[in-house]
Image 1 (cartoon, rainbow, N blue to C red):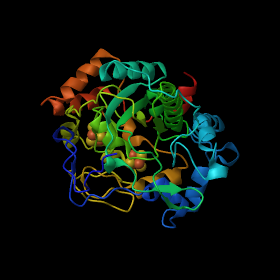
Image 2: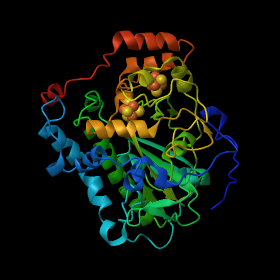
Image 3: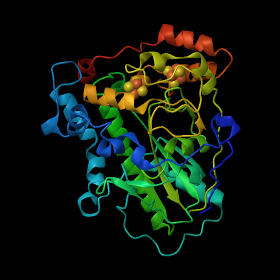
Image 4: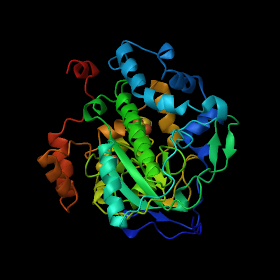
Length: 391
Ligand code: SF4
Ligand code: SF4
């Protein structure tokens, strides 16, 4: 596994994100959910209730729209598959797979690598199986040491532990699962959290299936979700999209409504290239997410290396959200929030031709006109959860 100097060059001119000499690899224990397990600055009664509420006996149901028993029932069920996988080795080994650790729920594969005639053939084959297994988006890039967590977080000791991937996994397969657009329209609500939970649950099924397929071909494959490495820089390198002001990946196919996973593998694959979609330039003239964010966690300023707390990555020139403010808002409202996704002009159904046309307009010098059109034609207000239930 090639080690890169930590004083790295920019990822790529097209991504618009630069890595400076100050860059440091990120310790997973500083990620905001890990911090909620050990850092008193993050811990609170609301944060405890927030996490406990993902299990029905502790759900804080209330009369307000989107927070009823059935809203929590669906939201919590949407996470069930990931929770089952997370707990497989939790008690015995302190692993929270898919959250803090890579998945290990695999059977033994083939002993010899399948002889693909070329990397082109292998890439086409893996893409085909990924789609079959449920991937909405797939991209491939090279392993990049910079985005691997410097250390992992151990659920048992509440402290750091070494990264546990073997060497020689030179390729990374990025998998994207779309979040339901109608559920996202009901943010903020417990119901809307179902879009996130289902995104991850579908992701887990796709990742495990594809990784097992690669193992059955006789290669190594390690499936990961939010664990092991920073996903967004890899997704940028795989050309899936660009990062918006809200720090989320924006793609031409699903806008910001996407949950990502990745597979580290040694099957020989061709790499995709980073691409510019004009999204950064659009965000320069659009501040809607920053205005709509209740705790003001999203910057109005230009991309910079500014960090707010230890949950931010040091040494990258980009838009950075204040994870502490964001998490505190989630805890206070007792469910996750995606207001920045709901209001984003790229949150559209791009299966429709007129939204694809809008994307082209937004990517052009007429981006201010595209923003004006979004203001006039799209209803970005919160949708009523009862109306969603009534179809
Ligand atoms: S998820 Fe909600 S609180 Fe967090 S940055 Fe987005 S709008 Fe703000
Ligand atoms: S709401 Fe506007 S500024 Fe924010 S990410 Fe979306 S396009 Fe960019």
